[in-house]
Length: 266
Figure (cartoon, rainbow, N blue to C red):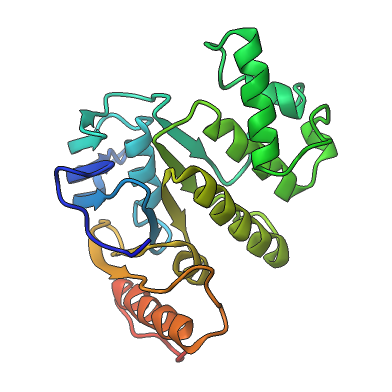
């Protein structure tokens, strides 16, 4: 899918002048986490958001998810205002947050309580197969590797058939090799489902590998500093000159957003 900026009448997600402040006990001024963030995300697009720690990128994701409701500006998903959490948006966090007393299939079924028993069983089986965990249905989270547990978390988030999947540093706790495997896995699932994805990450390689566009956030207060299109065909070659060139562009923008030039070239 070529990267592009969606028009306002076809956006899966539309953010207008999003701002977020937090009170600081003992101080007269508030902490400004986000300021005047405008973004459009097209249906089926993979949007990667990078920025320094504390720039508000996870807060932005929580606002889209409806988990953070006291903010300035407006959020729409599929043309409808976001007023709280909803099944049209699935969320995967850095920690899998599976319920430890439930098996793989029970954790996935937990996300679709509204379905009748037959439909629930079918949905669970489909999503176990989607993330490649056949044979592990009756395992508990403690019996799974970190990558397998994150696959279950992704399956659980996708089970209600959300229009949007929000990924908040979902592979940050994994080793480098497993992380790359999970990136390939997310792309495979995306190609099968074509769900709109918004990924928050510190990993520039991950952003370029997965994203149709990369949003670089400025340091606090978080603003959209630059949106970089990723015009590379899939599957992407991490060792190619084109990949390295885009990674360098994001890297330079990232360090400039922190108020200093990069100390080395890549």
